Image 1 (spheres, rainbow, N blue to C red):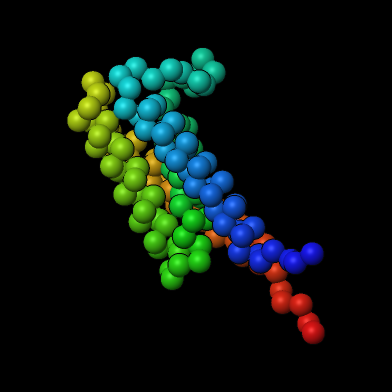
Image 2 (tube, rainbow, N blue to C red):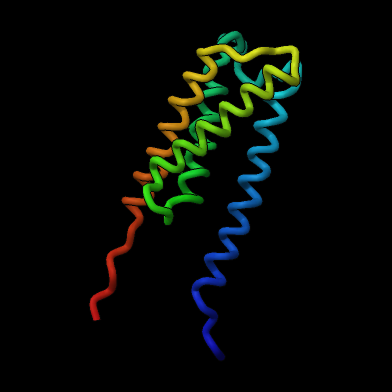
Length: 134
């Protein structure tokens, strides 16, 4: 029985990752662009919007790094792409909904983006396999 090339396995995971990224961006966009987002947090932190923006940046940064890890300068590229996505969504929120963006939202999203890209970089460094000696 012929062995399948490793690229087909990777491309399958790339397709799964792309689907997850599209779903994530759809959900994130929905919650940022609706007029009155639901509160998912406990009552004592429901008035603080920081955790949502921070986690949005972390997840978006991690996904961006995982997609761009094989490109030149993946940390810089993923950070730039993540910040552009998050800033674009914040500006769309300002234009399309009754809510405007705040500087603290943008700052927390950028901090989350850096944390997500950093987490992706750390995971990629820790999971690198050494070549098998022949």
